[in-house]
Image (cartoon, rainbow over all chains, first blue to last red; front, side, top):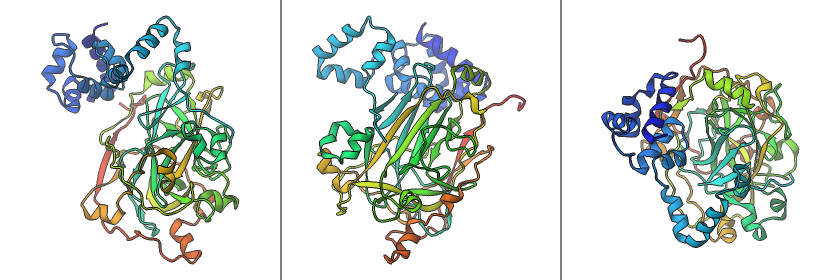
Length: 116
Length: 337
């Protein structure tokens, strides 16, 4: 699915339950022009900047990393992580590529719950 | 599972539902005057930094290693509040020194419905203290263990646990799908908690106590909401637990190598600067009655007087706090159009 199409679908779904999710009000809340948001939703404009996507994600209750990926972007913090240890992370990502989700979830560092 | 991300606890239950996620961060705040007057909600001054206990295990007390979890640095007599985010309904139990902050009862892992011993997300946006009455809490204030101030010591006579304990239970996936079809996600229109980092500077706390516990401080208006769901919507087959230790700021640099956060301003200084306090508007939900066990505790100021320490520092009353309303769009419910 394209970025704009996804945004429109999510926003419309929210609007069905809450009228403040109109194009105008969402645009106001995230600090862009309504006409610009409208064009983004119709994929007449390329996806906006990372900061705008993050504000949009927060407003719509969506995961910012998922929206950034749909927009063909990788968040700055992830880029920085890879840049610091490019070989290691490139290898890690290639290794993880074929793994199922539940196995990848185990790689994430959990907070250890001990005895209390 | 619980992870630490950007100084927040990120709680997820991917085995229950892909959207079963919430976050908890611990907001720095000013200590409200402890003078038995009721105050509005104080501001959020940024999140406390959080650290894995395992990363500093050799420099932390042995019991902390056994507990696992995380820690955050606090100055003695500093206050905090818990900031909850997420749209997936969860039941969350919070205890201080293994004393339940809602009921005053001893810790158990399980949820109890009568009396309700948990808060419900996303309805409950914050928790600032011990629930002592309907719409009233006593602020969480960090005090060294062993001096008799903490709720744990006042109720059990022992200074054994300290810190904060948290366990979360998600809504059943089937109940969530039904909930989602009926409800819009509640949204806070203004935030109490600015998304800013705070300045870090060397602390001047000379206390040698490492382990802090939470004591009841000043009085504040805050509702702890009654669970609006049927009790059987909670998926009690899974849970995520965390022991959050409170490390005295005086020991923070020795443990982590980082300077501790600065002390927040006093309530009077903050108010004199014309900065706002907060009140949540549009609260139409029923609130819990509060726990008589917790209502009977001495506040920090009362305890200090009883122990012959005289009035506590930085406790001047704030006469007319400037209150900023925080509007919360109510969830849309069936039959209310």
